[in-house]
Image (cartoon, rainbow, N blue to C red; front, side):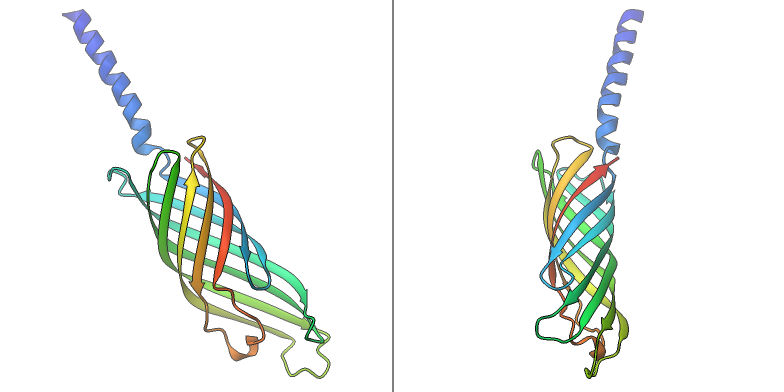
Length: 190
């Protein structure tokens, strides 16, 4: 009797240890990314923090994400006599939903954020534009992407994020706004 109780206790502990890491594994992830968009500045970097919610739903992954992106470039335009230093950064929160299909996990999301654009123009000459201007804007964004899990803790991802940032002030009308970006990155789940 004592032997069977010991075996039963060992089996219960082994099964509990085998199940517990799956239930708590990967609820939070931190990621870094390289971001490409059509408009100037075209290249930037991003950071994101994601937390899983409702983890008891099978196959479906639901979560909340906070993200931050930074773009900066000194641009000389062929059709203008002045150069422009543009710094753009944005941050936001989004709801994320996805499914686990083995090594690949496609996902979609929707959220709100704020974007700030700082512009410094040099060598204006007779151009009727302010030398320094900045503006902030609230925007919505949606994204679709996929992450790959070759190693459970490390997840490379690719994502396309589209957004609507259309309400900057008139003094920034010579700066074209990007409405989408391609994102390559890696996240660490813990």
